[in-house]
Structure formats: structure tokens, C-alpha cells
Image (cartoon, rainbow, N blue to C red; front, side):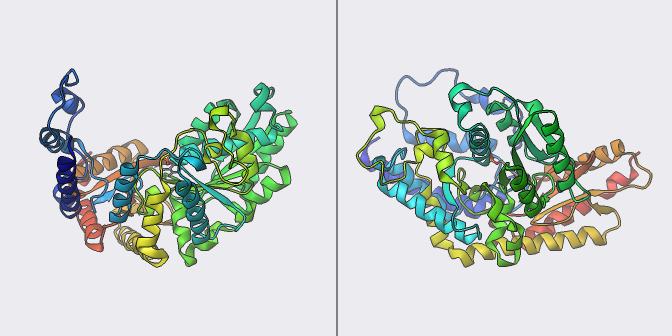
Length: 472
Ligand SMILES: *Cc1c(COP(=O)(O)O)cnc(C)c1O
């Protein structure tokens, strides 16, 4: 592609994205293609000769777009959101254009120093203790893996890094902890049998007494408790574990305390929600995802640690080909995580924070919380439905109820309702199971979602509901 073509298509693509932002509501939220539909129209072999951009772009629109599920649709109420924003998209364009690989300070000093500064801003914005240092990871899954690896090294005096694990170490999380914890426990060598899923109370929050008991039991069996992962906003119901109490237990037993706030952490931008982080002085590490609910393109996960030395000692490597004369004065983020090569992710975060300002971001989050409060009221006032969990953030868990119906029947009823509603193409919701009960999740948090969209969702749910009452 020559310069002129690059310029022309560059402008055209920005126009396309700007139109997409405006017109995304015209697409069905969830892609309607069937398995294989996309694969089957793609050629078996790659082209031997280069093809014109016009043809490639045409195929993007004809083949790829129908297979896209539209996360930026204002009717997005599935999973959790994964927002972008104009500022973030523009920064990603610049990042792609620079094509810098930011593994160490010298490979782009601005990337390293901007990351340090932006992460300090972010820690302050959500009210973390000033002493915590931040680093951008690709995902919360990776951040949690880093936490478990650091906890492993701390518990073994850095022996595991040298000789491997010589005795089992135990990890604790609630039965509502995210699957990334299980995955990290497997990868980090703890062994899944040494992960304890601590029971939760009626609000789906970890019960501290049960944690204490599990730790005691492991100690009496001569196992070594190493790490607790608590959650600020669980994936199924946005439950909040009692962090201050758990922090106290971790201190007493000298355990690593990691807090997974992948979704919920963003709410700490609001002063009125700040008390959620009670006990933050006891956190050894904390993660939340600006790529979920803080308008920053995937991937951007903010990982904070109390003691950066422990993190660096866990990961550092010193091959000759990466040594520079500046290493004593600067941060080399290759030693702050798993991979060597790093994207310049700080740029989009910087653009987003500057473009919205703290107040702008707070407004977005506050509005989503307000909309969730509204939706919750509608559910509560309608005797056909029941609320399934407290509404701590902008996630509402609910379902259709039916006199005398078994759990199996309720699951079928609600799954059928969910499918009908999603097939409308106007909105997309997903489900979970809470203590064995099928639950529909209404996760409000897409950047452009308005009260009108939330009302439409409720109207659609109500519209498709009566049919299910006549079924056996
Ligand atoms: C979404 C989520 C994760 C995983 O986030 P990734 O960034 O996709 O790895 C982890 N924990 C919780 C509580 C989540 O909601």
C-alpha cells in the first residue's frame, strides 16, 4: 500500500468507525451467525499475491461484521461491559501507528514514564493507599496470576523460583470467585486440590469465619496457607467480600491478600462508593479493569501492588541483550509481569482520563448505578419476578418466578424467556447460577446506554413473559 492509499483509507476507516458509533443500534446486539458460517466463506488458502484494500475492506463489511457481537450497542446488558470511547479509539490508532514495543524503559522512555504516572493517577482516583505502585497488565486473569506467583515466592522465601515447589501451598477464595483464580492456581503450580472455595452468605459474600477455619485446618494438616483472593464485585452477582475483615485474617496468618475488583473496582471512582475499599491498607495487590467499565479499549487491566520489590524479584530476568546503562534509575516493566514484549497501553488510559476528567468518568458510572436502581425497582414492583441478589453496583440479578415450580422448571422457563428476549436483537442479557438457582443478569454499563434503552429492555422482558405462564 502506498502513502496516498494509506491516507485515503485511514480517513475512510475513521469515518466508518464514527458512523458505526452512531448506527450500532441498527445491528442485532448478538451476532446471528451459526457455527461455521464465517469459516465456510473464507478461502482455504491465503492469497499468494497482495490484494487491494478496497476488496479487503469490502470483505470486512460483508463477511466479518455479520459475525460481530456488538459490545458497544446501547442494548448491551450481557456479561459485563467492555467499553471503548472515542478518546480511547484514537489513542489506539496512535499506538498502532507508533508500533513501539515497550518492554524496557529504553525501548520507549515515554511509555514507561507515562505508565508510571497514569497508574499513580488511577490509584489516587479510586482511593488506593498512596504507597501502592501500579502496572498495566493485559487482563485481570494475568494480574491474578502475577499475584499468585508473587504470593508463592513470598511464602517460600523465593525458593519455588529456584527449585520448584517442595510442599503444597494453599489458596483461598470464595465459591463465587472468578474462574481465572482456578486457572492461575493451576498455572502457578499450587495444584487445584490446594484451592479452597470458601462458602458465602445469603448475599454471596465470603464468610470470614469459614475462611479462618479453613486456614486453621490446613495448618493443622501441615499444609502452608499462602494467599487469599477476595472479590470486589463477583462476576455472577457483583457481591462484595468483607475486605477489611479478610484483610485482618490475612495479617494474622501472614498471607498474601489479593483483591479482584475487575468490574466493581471502577465504582471506587465515586466518593459515595469509596467505603467499598475499606481495609485497602491490608491489600498486597489489587486489580481492576479500565477495559470493562472505564471506557478504555480492551486490553487494559490496572494491577496495583503494595511492595513492588516482591513483584520484581518474582519476575526479574537479566539477559545480557537487555542490559542498559540506565537500569538503576528507571522502571523496566518487563520485570513487572509475565511477558517480555509490551504494548503501549498507557496512552489510551491517559487519553481517556484526560478527555473525560475524573468528573466525566464519575458521571458515567453514577448514571449506570442510577439506571440499575431503576431497573431493580421495576423488578421489585412486579409480582411475576424476583430479585436474586443485592444490587451493589450496576448489575441486577433477577428471574421469573412461578408458584410451585421446581428449580429445573424455573431454569427452563427463564432460559426460554432469555432466549426470546435476546432473539429480538435489540438487547443482549446473559445468565448465571446462584446457589443452584438459574438467574438472569442485567449488567448495565455500556457507555451510551440511556434510560430509554433500559426501559426498552424491561418492556421486552415483560412482553415475552406472559407466554411462559401458559406453558407447563
Ligand atoms: C471479568 C472478570 C475477570 C476476568 O477479567 P479478564 O480481564 O478478562 O481476565 C476476573 N474477575 C472478575 C470478578 C471479573 O468480573
